[in-house]
Image 1 (tube, rainbow, N blue to C red):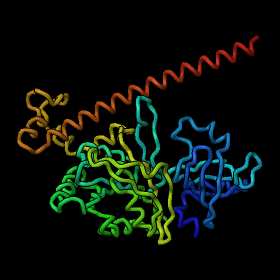
Image 2 (image 1 turned 90 degrees about the vertical axis):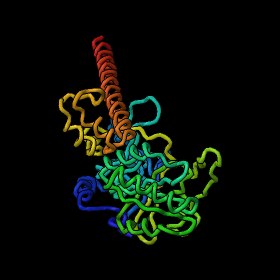
Image 3 (image 1 turned 30 degrees about the vertical axis):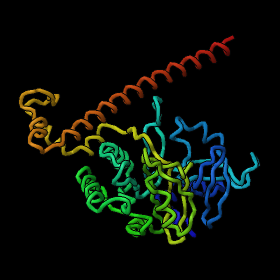
Image 4 (image 1 turned 30 degrees about the horizontal axis):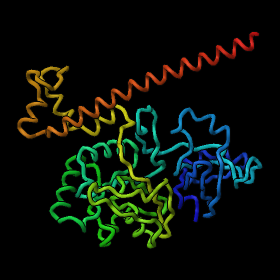
Length: 357
């Protein structure tokens, strides 16, 4: 195994040069154990590493802390703790898949970094939700990685239902590669193998119970992940994957498996939203008035497109919801920044008063 097999490239090498001069070694994080990380070295050796204090304090947010898939500079044999090494620096990320953290907090939650392909897994049954998939596509395309969608568990549904789901997703986003797969019948798994080449990292995301673990078992050729049953009433599966982990495959390539995602809140910007709804913007540009609200305004091209079937009413409503969510997120960010600014000023004043005494 070489660094290149793990996804190393010239850009990472150039950034790492200053760390190499200090005697530090490059490593890729494959596991987050909360207290420490699992990392893999150039020769394939796995080591347990802890987070250096300077890296922790330099991170302005949790999203800036090292995550599974990150390249880091580690100091081997450091005497600070019982682990094999200490993380002294995190290299820049060439891609980052993230969402707004669940709940009311205004924070970014990193899902996967330094990935080349991101696959969202769903099925043609109870898990299939067009509006949620639209959200998935938005965060996937913003990540910078190639986007793929798998209509999995095709053995449980009719060919017509599977093809209908696939066509729906193709209409949502022509840029996304759409495939119908079944780990049970071993059909379509070769599609994923097509992307898995040495140095390439593929991330799997989706709800619990859609068969991500079964697909991985099929790909690696052994029962690595325990697969749980799906509730017959809710259609939801148990979380068979409890933590993110990067797997290096013997045949080449790497997989990042993620716990089931129940909420897909955007962590994005207006430009990304417009890119995902380019068809809507193209129609909106034909409105009679530039400040058209697309409601009951005279000469509204959007309402006309909805009436003649050119634009789906559901897609328009989802655009409005995402736009509102984006605006609310922006307001929360500003409020959070103001709060932090006030807190920092109070702390500085408090320190100044103490030293003034």
